[in-house]
Image 1 (cartoon, rainbow, N blue to C red):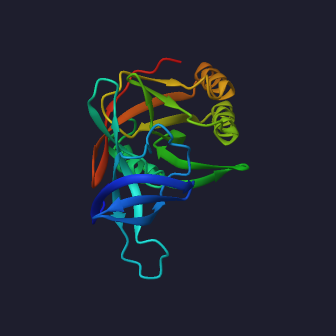
Image 2 (image 1 turned 90 degrees about the vertical axis):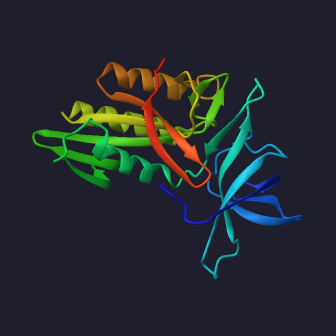
Length: 231
């Protein structure tokens, strides 16, 4: 996925979860943050951020904050895409070439089953599958983790996937890790143990857990390689 017009600035503050104050060319701009998560380890005053420029004159804010440079403990920097609205689009580009299904597979988005709505539904010959996507931006000491805040909604999604598996469907949970350079993925039990427990239970009943890292540039993001999973 690509952004057509990107500029950079210096993050100064985040008055609430929807907006941030960013310094650009000596002036401060109010920008929209395309991730309502806490992101406290990412949005540190003084860090460099990347903004997508909107061409909609009716908008209150001209810019969307979509990526951030994070300084690691070893002094190196990693670019992280934090546009949570882009995750499903990135997954949608990857699925047809993922090798999970054949080239003839029919892939549909936002499909309802029972009382649940899943990010993707796939039919591939006799195979029928539901797939849910979670974007991951939290990294500590080379370990990617999810969630970065308690998520009862996430626990609910896992149980819904287990129900699909019980009904005879294939079921997948894909974690899109919006950066490179992580050693493995693990559930963030310290933040929300119930999510980790549900994830381990889901794997035990046949839900397939996937974690993929991404090649991130200031103006693009693409799923790249599989990351080891330690539950």
